[in-house]
Image (tube, rainbow over all chains, first blue to last red; front, side, top):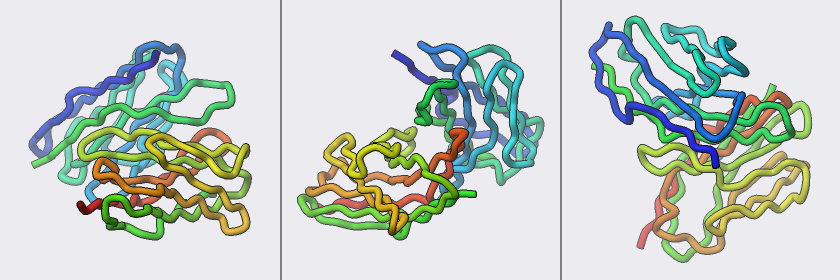
Amino acid sequence: SQTIHQWPATLVQPVGSPLSLECTVEGTSNPNLYWYRQAAGRGLQLLFYSVGIGQISSEVPQNLSASRPQDRQFILSSKKLLLSDSGFYLCAWKPSGGNTDTQYFGPGTRLTVL
Amino acid sequence: AQSVTQLDSHVSVSEGTPVLLRCNYSSSYSPSLFWYVQHPNKGLQLLLKYTSAATLVKGINGFEAEFKKSETSFHLTKPSAHMSDAAEYFCVVSDLWGKLTFGQGTILTVHP
């Protein structure tokens, strides 16, 4: 069966520090991968998605970036965090192709920027 | 373009009473619709999904939702609430390329 992992589970970082959040998927190959952010009291916002290694699409311009160095690894990064980057970050995957559009979510990373 | 509106930000019910979480959508084509549930500090779990088959969709934990095209609605219901149902619920619409648009969420509180 497929599983999706995210780490760390929680993170407290000072303003201006770098960020690296990691997401990995097991039990599938060539998945579509997604990064979402959930700010306090708000719905989920799609940040990035990837349909293959090295292929990244950005939905929202900001100081975050994403990379996909391996087929089942998706990394969210920042060179300098802002207070507004605080939130709950969720990674999701979906089988590529086929006729399914269901996305499966990881457990999330709670980021607090102070 | 597509959008989702969850009509209630908070719903409070007593244990054992029915649950109704309302969702309206707009889409340029026949959409796929989902309900996800999120418990505090957890990821999202799929409750149920509609993909142009039966309009009444049954999901996990006794939840179901009815797709009504004429009303552009996809309300989530459960006959009898349980304390463990307390969580935040998201109505979601998917476009033809699998891009999801989330509603703002409805927080369900269940009182003993």
